[in-house]
Length: 165
Image 1 (cartoon, rainbow, N blue to C red):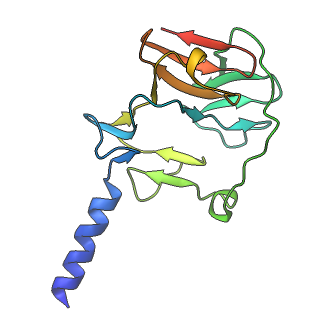
Image 2: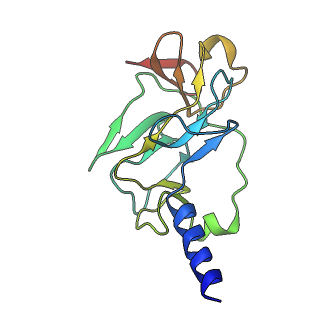
């Protein structure tokens, strides 16, 4: 019985501190969440019309203003141009709609969000896409990735790609 409990505790510790690799075998470096290289996919930021209980570090596609924004105590617009709102809707599981979300890097979090990354020494590694403005067909508003050709952060605002150095 003691070995079973010890094994379960060890497994829980591994799960809580896990790094997640998507479409690849392992995470590069100290990333908390990492994606396969040479993809034509990116992360789609949440498209929101209101943001109750927002915390610093939140990154969204504001469906009202049609701009990418992040929160650092107040909202900062990152988009230079106004985009278009997303027309399709996303299906959200019950755990997300009830405020639970998915937490990676910790067992719990006080931050509200659909996906919460908690770590003091690991970061999100964005999907790496070569020239997303040429290679991503029909991107959704709020898509974000790292452009490996131009070495920039690339964001689609619904109308145009924006490149941030």
